[in-house]
Image (cartoon, rainbow, N blue to C red):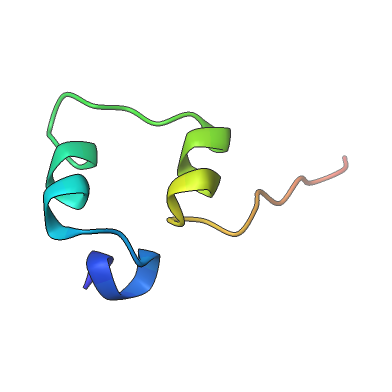
Length: 42
């Protein structure tokens, strides 16, 4: 599912989704997991 959504190889998806790995917003955007971050104004 992630390979189809992100266009990344299975090996790269497995590497990036290891249990102890955390992505920053910019890393997640570069990888293709997110399109952006919504901000709420209070």
